[in-house]
Image (tube, rainbow, N blue to C red):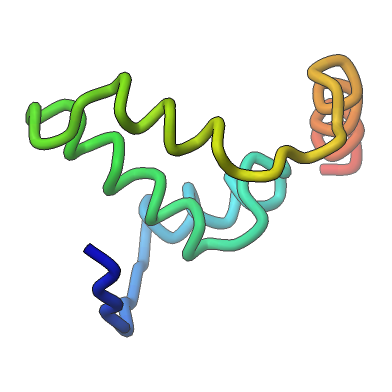
Length: 82
């Protein structure tokens, strides 16, 4: 299941604000990444995907070398700038 779909989406209002905030806080590298994560979460909520299967796939990817503590510091730094 290696299908690729390209979409052009326009967001305004709260959706646009939330996407920007997620990226600004460093939760996601891009808005596209945030949208992909939301889609996976929604599919899990609808029982279209199994949480354990998704977790196994996530664990297979190369991990970022940022500790949870450093991430918290980085997020706080971004919040302090605003």
